[in-house]
Image (tube, rainbow, N blue to C red; front, side):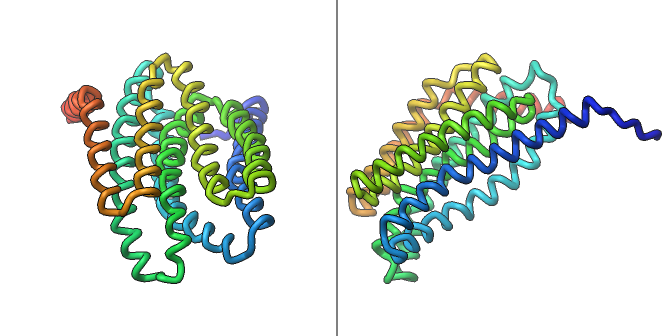
Length: 271
């Protein structure tokens, strides 16, 4: 086939690439600014302990981002009228899985406490940082993938830039004014949750789907996980979070039924 150079398409691709590049930089700086604040305000030992717990969560994010690379081309080939239905089912299944994955925290913490006894003080921060995987996972696998498929890269940039600026202000307050390491680490989860919520509200408006109830439920379940794991003994924390997750499953049972029906119908169609 003959190669045809299209100037307009080339400039569109360059524009999209620039937006995504700047968006990725802003996204990295959201957590990067908080880490710099910790590094400047506390000693290197404290910074190293927080970095350890961040690295554990990043292992999971590497896997999730790899899946997102597979989902994007599939969505690009999907008819526009099918995108809202797929979105609702995809986000529901993902969040059920992500909140179930949080249960891994408890045995993981026990193992790491035995394996790295010198870092027991640092591993408590996993309670605060581990939930960031929930919001980062939804952002990377569903929201960003959909926004890119709908050519809304500029919206991704705007959201990341806004939350990056908020990160600067929050870090100044929690590190220099309040001098609280706990609040500084909590701010990481809050900032990532805020970014996910803003981006999802933009996307849901575009797709004309309602997600506000789900956003509230997910925030409350995250709050239960953090508060129970931080304040309660690990055995009791497991019970509390398991009950809360069970209640979440009960409230979502209609959505689960809808997904199973959709999955069965899709399977029959493909056959």
